[in-house]
Amino acid sequence: MQIVGYRPRVEEPAALLVSRDADVQRIWLEPGVELTYTLANRHCAGTVDDGTHIACDNATAPYCSSHTDRWPCARCQGECTLPVASCREEHAIYLAAFAPDAFKVGVTRSWRLETRLREQGADRAAHIRTVENGRTARRIERDIATAVGDSVRVDRKRRGLHRTVDSDAWERLLADFEVIERFAFEHGLELTERPVAETLATGTVRGTKGRLLVIEYGGSTYGVDMRDLVGFELHDGKTDRNLQASLGSFS
Image 1 (tube, rainbow, N blue to C red):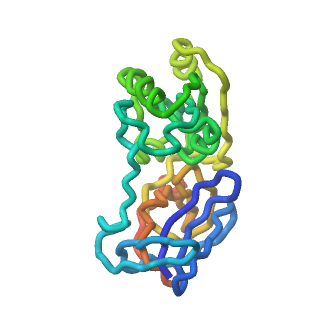
Image 2 (image 1 turned 90 degrees about the vertical axis):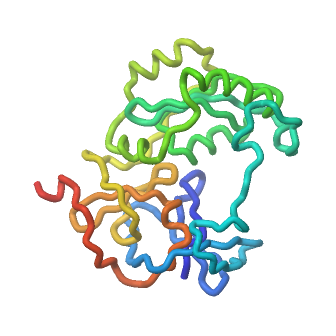
């Protein structure tokens, strides 16, 4: 069994996608679920075609060069010729906040706005512009990013899992924009301390936030980047690795 992907919590609970004899199944990550797996060898996760997993033994993980998707819009700054059909759809420009004080600007197709925010694990967000296509949106994003930034690294999101958004800093940022709609998301983690950064699939699921999975195990709480799990083969049984303990486990 190999982890071949993951799905953040949007309309359905978050899940790890696993391949069993080429059949792709879900390990649901709802709060309270017990994970009892040991991570074994890691290699390319291959590809999934219509629910069937096509394996790849290349040692590069999570994906080798043959199975790495290169989304043409990922680095676009509005200087394109609208090469993808989705570029011609209406786009929303948004600001997103990640506790306590990490902010970014982003763009997405208007109909995917809330979905995109949940995928990223935003705590708060504001829709600030609507434009006719992705090229125009990228140009505006590029200008705003010089002051706000256009990305927040997973490690920084993890460091704020037990925090709340600095409301004063967020409102100061929004004061410079015309806000169309606001969003506030509750992720239900209820943490009192920062989870330890770790890669494991053993423990009780506390919840998820974007691609971060929070697991409680041995009296400690761990924050796992689900992308770091992709490519690992799973064996049944809890891990026996020595893991760093959180401060709360000593109280």
